[in-house]
Length: 58
Image 1 (spheres, rainbow, N blue to C red):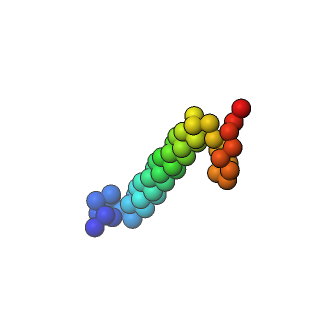
Image 2: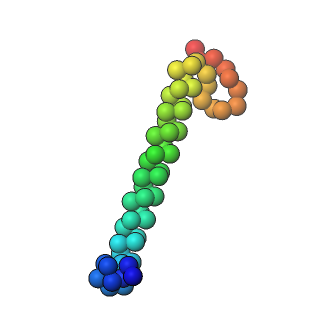
Image 3: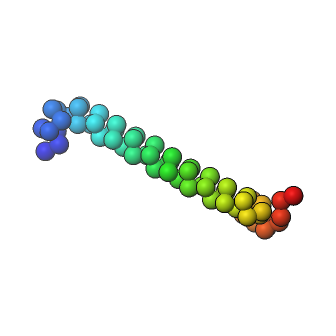
């Protein structure tokens, strides 16, 4: 079905690869942004961002 829609097997495969890459890049960027926001939040609260001990940063 998708092969007909995209004009053949190779074009359908190329489209699928392109979509997968874009989705993975988007997901990686989203997780990185979330990780950075979490890290910034911890630093603003005055705690170390190592995740183990809540030591005050001077």
